[in-house]
Image (tube, rainbow, N blue to C red; front, side, top):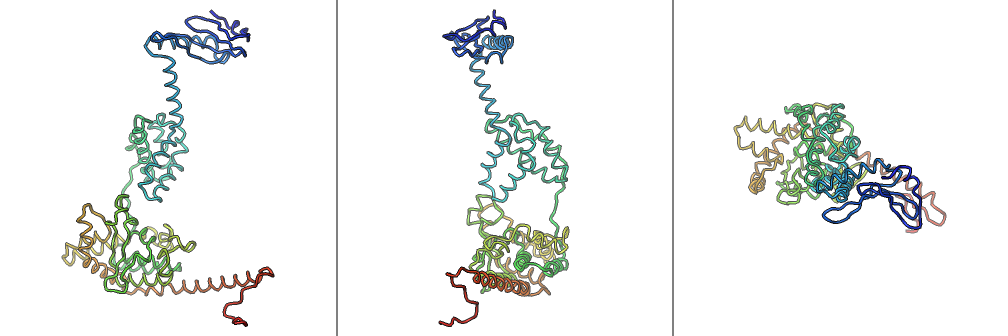
Length: 456
């Protein structure tokens, strides 16, 4: 048997050689003098070799320990060489399949089914709250306690609804990992009942006509961009979703000069599943009241009929007003906790259903629900949306008459905006004249607007 002294004295020779210990273990010395531990064994009648590592990094006692473990595997019918490769491959797989890597793979597979804004929100939640704590860990190394630690950090800032959403996202990632062979269980499911319960939260909305009229007066009475005021009024008149209002395009409004004007909202802009968003059957047609038509006409006059959007951003004519524009408009009017843009849907539903009950028109309830674009399954639902158009128009007109009683004309909402636009145009003209005055000598400066050309 070898001694540590003999191993240290093993030097390079003209040819590689071996120093044998016992039980198939030997020290292999190369021509360059590199020493490494090798183990010779037979498996199913074939001679095989296994390397344990270099000397002195792997000491003589450690090499004998590794030899004994390998011999034990042979006795159990396991090839130690194959077993090592399998464990190395599994370790490499675990290193690659960190929770962050798996979550990104899941997100990439899912985002084609989502709207871009939602896909961005989901990824942002992972980046902010999940990856910093467990992103670098292999999926198999993540326990329920670690998941709960992530959730508790979110709950600590009183974001209880977000905590529930993030837990669900993590659970979805683990289900994806299980199906892909990267995990065996879902620790996020285990902690579901450990989260702080959340009470259903309704969006603030007024439910009385007088209060609704006051909301309209408060918002429109403040100083704001005219496009915002027009968008807010059309939102109240149609009870459409704010996102649909933001993305409204001039070409969607039809027959404005007739007795049956409509707003044809493409299915792609509706709150639908991906399959329905690409199915034109699910486009939503809104019959417009006289007051809504007036708003649309004024907006078209302001932005022009060829504009890409009816309510463009102040910063980019080709982008819609932002998600926060209407919400801030209501907050600035002092309506925080009282009424939000989405609240018009609840206001419309409450008041018109109460009216239907007072007038014993039970059939109006389903029609009012239909007017809120609550999509039901089946082809019949698509036909019903057209079949009840006449009654929908009557209900929409009555709602507009009730809500707009005493309201100013929509043209009044843009009076200030027009003045602002004229001043802006004058400033732009002044800037152009100043720029032309600084033009190089070989470039003729532009003539002032309104001055005749002597050579004309």
